[in-house]
Image (cartoon, rainbow, N blue to C red):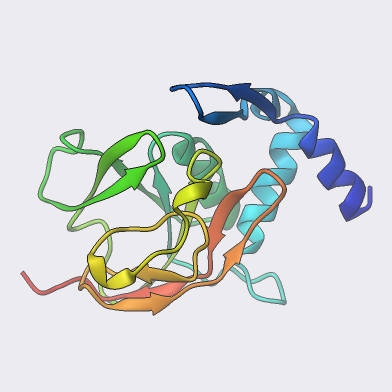
Amino acid sequence: MSRGSVEGYLDTLIRDIPDFPKTGVLFKDITPLLADHDGFTAIIEALADAGRDASGTTVVDKVIGMEARGFILAAPVALALGVGFVPVRKAGKLPAECYTVSYELEYGEATLEMHTDALTPGERVLLVDDVLAHRRHCGGDPEDGRVRRGRGDRARRPDGAVVPARTQRPRSDAVARTPHAVTPPAH
């Protein structure tokens, strides 16, 4: 199947739900995509490709998945790459010491956390996230301390440094950001 026909096929598996979870929000329901073996496989492989070099060699050490739909996509991407998976969860869901960041959604605010020991200095990570509900809040000023989900032109490392990032966006609009070495702050 050609890339264009794959993209068209995948588009048929993403359902628009108007006014969910709040009036004025157009929710992109990926459950039909997840239920379709061929579609789900195509998305996972496309996202995993962002963690490989031109020869197909894995170039990341971990895959980070953002709660909640990001878990569904990032965990199988990690398996496809043969690397570990790091969950980023809503506040209060992880049991150990965490890095914490708050950000705006089109229908409110949210806070995410990641264990401080989830990554070691120098590890390269691939961040996989579903951004279908967050298109209006892409980009922004990286100096304001908020994680901006979507465009992927910059990312904030746990040490506070802002680094450039490129976005690979399959038709599902799930994001796989180009791997970057991570240097966690000293404890």
